Amino acid sequence: MVAKKFDVDVNLVKKLAKLLDESNLGEIEYEKGDERIRLSKNSSAIFQSSPPVSHNISNMSGTGNTKPAEQKNTSNASTEGSIPSPMVGTAYLSSQPGSAPFVSVGDRVNKGQTILIIEAMKVMNPIPAPQSGIVQSILIHDGQPVEFGQSLMTIV
Image (cartoon, rainbow, N blue to C red; front, side, top):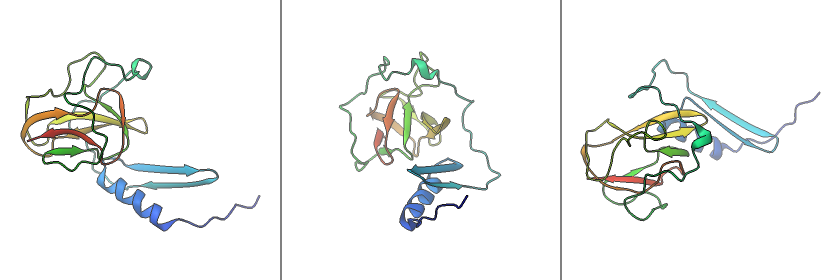
């Protein structure tokens, strides 16, 4: 059997490497047709700022009781205090279905405090507050798919 040769899209590899570097992921894989690119970090550091989290995916329909504080904003983060998504995935506002959210509008948060989690490739990634402040708005709802750079909430 002869392996099929394909040209590697260097720009795509660079983008994937940048996403891998900017996120808390240890590995990323891209597949399109017969082509597959897999990048992974070799790191002995383990990032974990909260206890392990598990979600019952069968109960995640995106129709949870948590409501966004303002109209949803799916544009890229550009306003002051806006927290952009560091990765593509599914955002969860609490550690497990039915539990209290990590933060609510009006809450004071400290830099490094977990404000939500994003599930990416079946890995729960805690998202820390990049700064201390007060949660002004939550722009997503529990169980919502999010894109890289999408505004998640604002903290000022």
